[in-house]
Length: 348
Image (cartoon, rainbow, N blue to C red; front, side, top):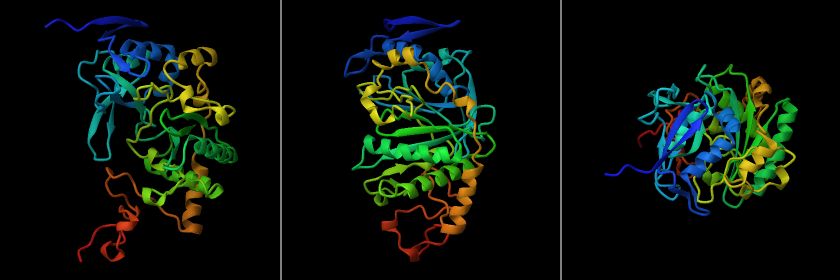
């Protein structure tokens, strides 16, 4: 069999072989695998800062984004010896070695392995059990849209200002808005998730007509869901500057708070972001200098439980049952007599 076409890309001192460079990955405009390589090279400082020393899940599209998606947690086979990894533990208790980006060549090798999206953990390899990033995920539900997310984003900013925390917004590249807060790596996943829930509940109080923290979709209505569970172990979000797996090549794009009212998701693609990055640089460049403690949010969580009777909320379905977690069953399907106080099914 003839060898597949390939080209070589020099990334610092490393040479990365790119196979099938002309394969179309994005059908709307026809960008290829090699175009994707050039995109990530153009935003190199930004994507490396977003991924640096974090366990990273890869969303791979061997035939382009119109084809099958492969969710890759473990490092793909065939990695060169200069690729770094980090061992992580999943909710199931199993472990795996994931890609750990420390340099731009690691990202380009990921693209060679057909990776379009890079989804990092919110902890780093120095201590994967202690997150250093609080993630605020604004997810529009049916009947709401990105415009609603932008309105909620202004309230999110106000709460952060009241807390003395700096928020770093970006578009999701899909439907919603993300805001990151760099935090001291002093607490575990459970505490950081608890802090995120307390934050979400405060935003909900300030904008109850448009914001919900309801975990069950049947309870959310036409509101923007603040997904606190994105702060649980092994939950990942597309990194800043990550391309998303859609035919038009949208990008999860850092923005400024001043831009927020006017931006649209369609503004940021692999075709437009290189020029924006060349002009503005990495808008998240200062994130590691704005470290904040989640202790005020943990105090809010205690207040919510003490004064308002608001305890924990359900975890995602792949998690073992957690202590203090409410029943993990849709309210419409729940018959009180069939569930004990730990949320376990009991026989009739």
